[in-house]
Length: 107
Image 1 (cartoon, rainbow, N blue to C red):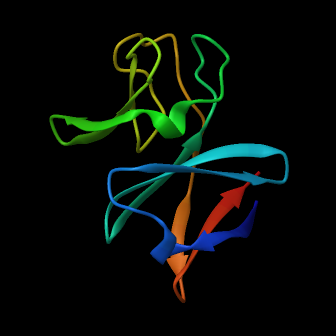
Image 2: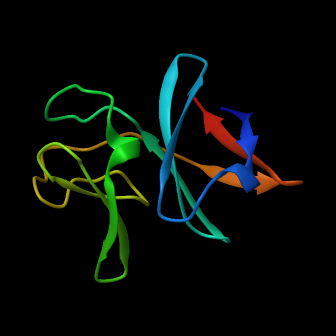
């Protein structure tokens, strides 16, 4: 696993997804707040379309969530686990901000 620089954290808007392509991984970056950032796979597991960065950010209980913009399946941003359909999940990547830059840990 290696940390890979993705983009300046200042370029991300709260509650709005952005997509980065890192070493062949299409990743949706979701900034929930200034100190809460998630990196998940951009591919919708139900349709195969690369659209998750355009999903709807929300929550279920204490879990920050992302709903697919196509069929509204909901995923836990912390783990990628499907909450609407437990058989579906999205990839989840560790992320951090170092010296103002977003870094993603890739396999």
